[in-house]
Image (tube, rainbow, N blue to C red):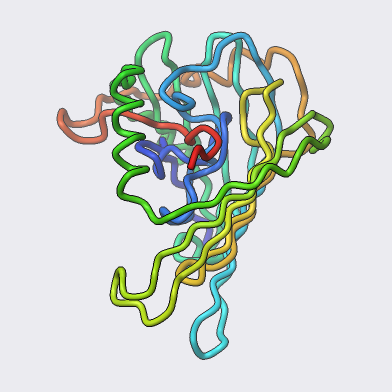
Length: 260
C-alpha cells in the first residue's frame, strides 16, 4: 500500500529535508532534507536560487548483525527571496514500513508561513514562521557547544562536488568513557562539504555507533530561478491553520557548517 503524507519539517529535524542543507547529524533520520526548509543558521538565504535532486540514506547495524536501511529521495528548490520547496519519498525504515511515503513542504518567509501539503485530501496545513534573532542563534549555539562532546575539526580543503565548488570539513567528536555510562569512549565522525556559492551543504557523511551511517547529497544542481508555482499552495487546495501553540515554525532548517 502506498501512503502519501506531507509534512513541513520544522525545528532542526523536522525541517530537515530541504533546500539549504542536510538534517542535523545524530538527531534522527527522516523527512525534511535538511537543505531547504527554513532559515539557514538563523537566517533566510536570499539571492541564490537553485533546484536539485536530493538523496539521503541511513544504514543502522544492530548488535546481532542485522541492519535497518532507509532511503529518502526527492527534489528541493529555493528562490531568490529565500522561499523553499521540497518533495521527498521515504523507502524502508520506520517511515516506510507499509510502502513509500511522500512528503511535500513549502517554506515561505516572505508571507511568514510554512505549509504541509496533502496530495490525497488536497489540503494544506499552514503554520506561522518565527525566525530566531541573530543574537538568540549565537547564544543557543554557544550553549550547545559548551554542553557537547569534545570535538576536533580538520580542514579537508576545497573540491568540486556535484558541479559546484565546496569546502570540506571533518569533525570527530568523542564522548569520554563513563560520561553517559559508556565503558569505552564513543567516537563519531561528520564529513561536510559546504558550497559558499549556493550557501548550502551539498554532501555530508556521518558515522556514529549509536545511530549508524548516514549519507546526504545533492545532484543535478540547476542554478537559476525555479518555477514560482513550486512555492505556492496549488489551486483547489483547502488551507487550514495548525492549532495555536502546536507546530509553529521556529528554526526550520539545517544548521550551518559545524563550528566545533
